[in-house]
Image (cartoon, rainbow, N blue to C red):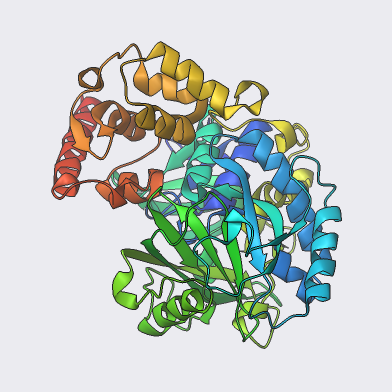
Length: 513
């Protein structure tokens, strides 16, 4: 909660965080858990850009070994196991098949990289790399004839936008204020603190903070300009990454890591039961930050990759959905987009002893928790009364699954709601973990969950997302809180937006009264 006001009626916080992506939400959670007062502002929805446009993996980054990013890979591998334990409902192990057909790298070099990958991070929960013959293994189904040797290693899947929301939810549960659709208009140092003008649904107001945290992702330099600040020797390099979703290419719950002649790699991953997710690309982005779309050239590149390996010869017209995001990578002046470091840099600007500003450059989803911990370490001199680091073993909301046994959780839910469809219960358990009980309540029938919006989305879930997870539009719910946009019937978007508008009007009326 806010501390003392800077002037009469003005809110005062320890941290004003700009940006509701994974880094901003992670820092807010860590700081709130240390007893600091936090305000996070996000100009759109949580995870509305980069953090929801990832390949949806918690991984060490096998290909980063080629660029000698050993520190980053080690940190990411350690975090991979920590996050798996913190959120077993939205993160789970995934086997990756790495075929050696069409490989631009010799098999011995790939195997050496996988040996390092297995051992750099002190792997405990995931299986070690093994070699298979795809011609004789079910892992080779769907592939072109001639596929033989492949290596199988492990990483994890993550519901990326839900990871952001759960960090924000936990931050709010610990006292942070999370304001979406709220923009930082300007900020200036005054008397040893920051005064910022923010504009949101309820109008414009001034707030004060001891520290300004710039976690705006692609907009990090824009925020520096709004704060009349310049970061020395730091910069962000914008890279577009695009993905396509096509009808299922193969049977099985394993993924593929495919090597291209240009040495770039592309993932093919099971997606939403009936589809395969294919990506990503790495293209320089010279435009302004904002919404991005896949280009025809990127679509052709991804389809060509699939045709190189799989029996099914997909074409651009087979794509059922695509998405693209702008990655705000730290500019290390690498010669190609795919070689730019995925490591992060934290830049602390105290401007001659005045109010500090911490800017976040780069980073990846897997290392967000450690990034937040490092960010708070940089700020500890300004908050000597704050408690120590605490997030390493702390479950995220819904992640307190006994024994990390998801199937046991699902079995309990099924026994408590025997008349509800198991696919619905499984999806709710995956999305909300133990907090699915807050949606289901005592309902024993679908009718008990209220209006059916289609695709398994009910009024009870929509109400929860509105009240607890800052969802305000159909897009928020259908493509970030879930991927039900691929499953709902025509008309759902309009019905859902109308319902949410009524909920918002009712909530505003209560505030006015």
